[in-house]
Amino acid sequence: MKFLHTMVRVKDVDASLHFYCDLLGFKLVTRDDYESGRFSLIFLAAPEDYERAKVEKAPCLELTYNWPDENGESETYTGGRNFGHIAIQVEDIYAACQHLQDNGVVINRPPRDGYMAFVRSPDGVSVELLQKGDKLAPQEPWASMQNTGEW
Image 1: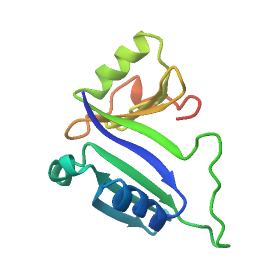
Image 2: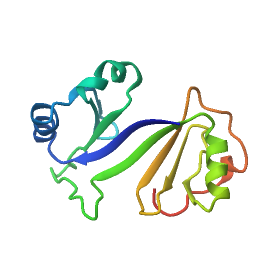
Image 3: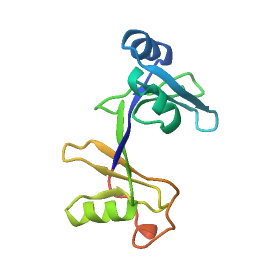
Image 4: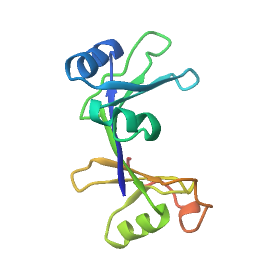
């Protein structure tokens, strides 16, 4: 297992970059703006992790900015929705999910694509599991399993 990133939703990119970079000392690794999805993903790394993060994007703080709608309205995050998830890279996504399921963990978003799954911690924190390397071939029962609850 390898810790990858923690995602936090932000409402003001400039204020957030000032806080995390100028005040706390994080360094900008990448920024990708997705016009079709109307969001931006900004990855930051601590100075000690910066060189490695440029290659692996890990460990990072992911700032997610959801653009205002056509009326200029931005979502107000309540109930901790500004905190997104913890991401962990695993050697075999199917084996990891099976192990968790065998131990009573609900697979909220099954790894239908052989690459990504979501579960929740006992405290309700969303945990994203990502397959190391290439996606695995689709495999049952995961390929046809539906989402359960929130992730």
